[in-house]
Every structure is written in structure tokens, then in C-alpha cells.
Length: 142
Image 1 (tube, rainbow, N blue to C red):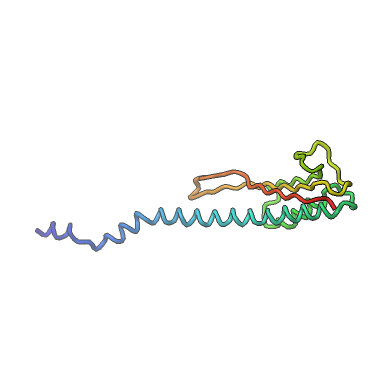
Image 2 (cartoon, rainbow, N blue to C red):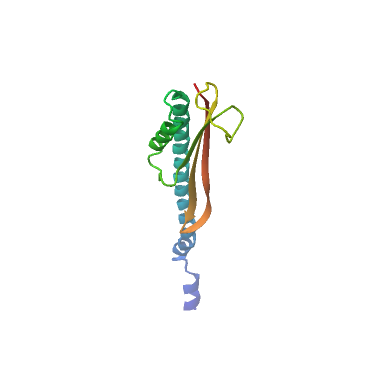
């Protein structure tokens, strides 16, 4: 009789349920944090791409063929790992990408700033998804 009473007690039930659900809650929380970091990187890259395209579009008379635009993009993306950030700035005749020949002197040509940065969503050291974030901004050469 005493054994039956002990088996029917529910004093530890809440702790057991919490122990079963806790890993799932932690995985979801870590996933949300990882997504937030990746979204912040995307927003930073979008801004850096816009800055690079604008700098390239307005610096036609500088004669550096987009080097100042690359520097501007690196400065705008200061919180990203610069060794992993790939920046490509081109000036082409509108409608041709990638360029076969670049022309930085003709007004109206299309300036394209393309930034690529790797991402990886890891939850408890298990890679769920990995790839590259890519942003492209186009402007007309002034």
C-alpha cells in the first residue's frame, strides 16, 4: 500500500518536465541569437554596399577605378571580419554584368558594388545552415 502511494505522488513532475523541455528551449533561444547576428551582418553589408556604390558613382574624376569605393565599403563594414569580406566594384555599360571591359569615365555607366560575406548558423556546435550573404547595389556614374 505504501508503494502505491509513493508512485502516485506528483511532487517531482514539474522538474522532470522542465528537464525534458529545457534543451529544446535553449536550442530555440540560441537559434534566435544566431539569426539576430546574421541579420545585423546583412544590414551592415547593405549599408556598406550602398556607401561603396555612391562613392564610386561620385568619384569619376578621381581616377582610382573604384579603389576609394572599396575603402569606403571596408570602413562602413567595420564590425565585420575584413579578411572574410569580399568587395567587388565595377563600372559597365548598363545591362552588362559581369563586365567584359570597365569604363570609369563615361557618365551614365552603371556602377555595381557587390559584397559577399559568409555566415553559419550553429546551435550547440551543430551547423544547421551555412552559406554566403550577398548584397548588390547599382548606381549611375555621375
